[in-house]
Image (tube, rainbow, N blue to C red; front, side, top):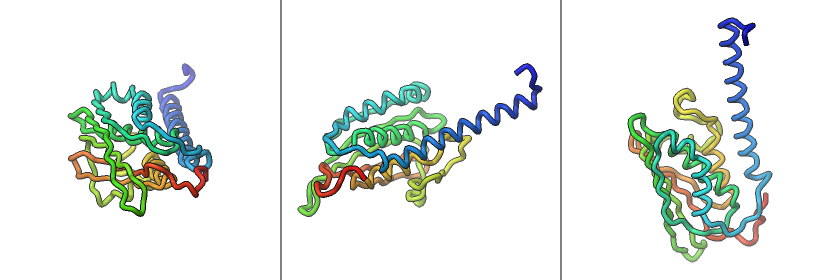
Length: 205
């Protein structure tokens, strides 16, 4: 370090930062791929425990932003437990990250049962509501694509892969992921999952 002048130190810092971003990007792309390549068999999963574990992993972000997270009663359903934790961690992480500058994050997570229509099994809807910056719903499909971002990385860090991972997890679980939002009015991400996975399909792709 002592042998480098200010310009050399600046170049070194830039290279270190670029390497860290590349490492994060590679890890996110591997996570995207593993949704199918390292899928685990479906089992009965208590989403209350999953959400609590995901929140513990986000403890640093919660403390730094003074976030308040309300976890209401969630269902037990058939799923891949590791992928459910990844799903909750990504959605809760985004809810915390995309907060307003002058307001701490307030996030509410709750579930609602949708009765069977006779053709499909019972479905659960999981809602992740926040009071953050929100988004224009005309970009609703775009945010679920790989590398698609609505904000500069300098403003909100990230690789643009997290929501794409969430949607891929939903596809594997025969579910859906949608968002309701308005700019400046927060966002609600809606996860729709069947209570039981089809018995005639393999849990591992």
